[in-house]
Length: 433
Ligand code: NAP
Ligand code: HSE
Image (cartoon, rainbow, N blue to C red; front, side, top):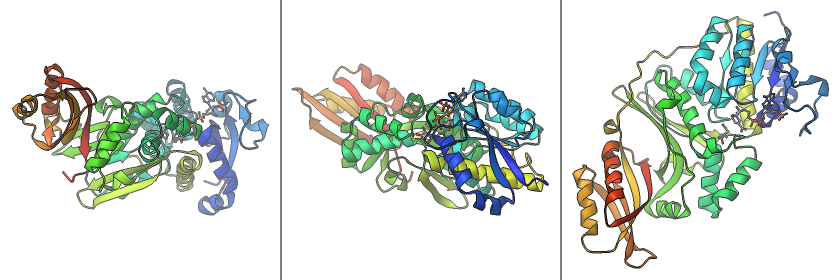
């Protein structure tokens, strides 16, 4: 590459776009030392050109027409930080087909269309990097692809949604309400434009689909990830968790046993001694177990302007270095393992359940008999009087049991005469099993 200058088309100037602008403008000299070229932001796509921005930008750079950016022949690299899927996919494909390298922070786009877009990139000799799409500021994708290239990963557990982790931390540490904590996360720019993806687990499921594709070398789809959100976690459950030595976290779990894979996102009780239990606020962490290396954990801010922008700009530096070496589009390894998903009777974990039952003789015996019938063995039971007269609150923690067994138990408990309500139910993780 004889170029002295690389021109970037920035598509989006919100939380992440603003950070990218700041880093490229503010770190020019470092970027020049590392890449040997000047990096210039040539055009910026926004929705509303008149909107007041938090930084001063030359208004001549702004456009509301994506094709002004995509059709500019002097632009070498597109940085997509606008979000969205259908329209954005069209723009990314267009960019790649016209020989422009692409960097995106968009996990929605990559979880749904990653395979197609990466193939298109390779076909056109372009780079397509997406480090910022998982766990914001943590360089986890590069760690999986490069750092674990000679290892076999068997387990990844991730706190990969900053918004939900922020809410759960505020609820448990400050006694904040769910609504107040969510509003605060939105104000700080952590939440997606529609925060139901954050609290409902979908955002984490997209990230786990990307992590398991790269970690297990299989073509995972979003549909392969079972997903439950954290909207129904209550302060009572958080208090029970504390008492029993756990913290409630929205975690993504990806495990591989004998080539069979399970991937889920759910609020779970995590043992307080496990390193993931101390990951608080907007911080994310991905715990990765490799057969050769053993336990590792990657920790850092999972969202926010500058941490996410740093991941984007690091991708940009890699693209520019590849341009100099003339190796763009050659680094991708397509998934090479067959995808074999576990059925529910092949998934094993401990479980926590909290029930309101009639406080009468024989009720506990009936419940324990039901559990035994489905091979669910009890590790711990706590019974407390309930505020309603003649009722009791029953908390059960099981030994490791199959997911199918526990599902049968829950189904039958629903119909059991002396059980009023299943208040809550969580997977329990971090006991070393
Ligand atoms: P954001 O604050 O909502 O900003 C989106 C930007 O894109 C805005 O500048 C908006 O223009 C522009 N835009 C949106 N739709 C457009 C359209 N159809 N045409 C033209 N411009 C459009 O979003 P963000 O938080 O920066 O997130 C951007 C991406 O990064 C998303 O994919 C998100 O999932 C991902 N991400 C975000 C974070 C984070 O911490 N926020 C972390 C990791 C990954 P206006 O400014 O004119 O409205
Ligand atoms: N909304 C996301 C989160 C942004 O809270 O983690 C980072 O992907």
